[in-house]
Length: 185
Image 1 (cartoon, rainbow, N blue to C red):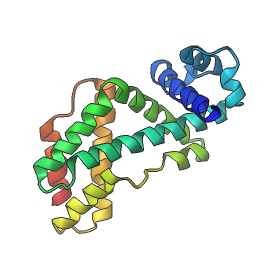
Image 2: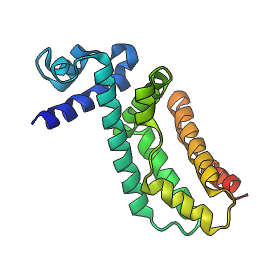
Image 3: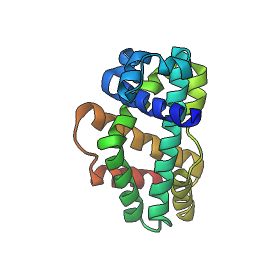
Image 4: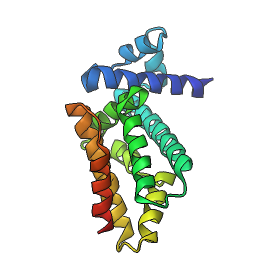
């Protein structure tokens, strides 16, 4: 039960962070969001640092599950169009609904991690099926330095998502195909 309550609170904290920003993330705000009695969050996450650590850990779990799902849906990637389809799907997920809230929380946590090595360690990009699919796609085309090219491609994708969160709109298919073409050069 404690594990389920921690997950519920971490998910509520993600929503608070996405809606109210880092300053709005308080134990009381999480209690209200989770519809639990005042003091519940502080019983599970005693300090603000513990709350942020729980939130970031849950965020990474949810992101990893999303990346696994997208990769499984599109495996194997044989063409530029299939990779662009996967990137389009991922950007849409990260810019709408629950994925948008997670993206807002992720970027707020990334800024916080600049001053917090523990958060930074949790947020470090993880191995996942999506990252591996991109590496395999690039390797199959004889791209040199696959690891760095995959990292650059995925970092650019992340930057496009951030830009669209801040400035509105969608990531265009042409922009994604341009990123892929650059990675293949």
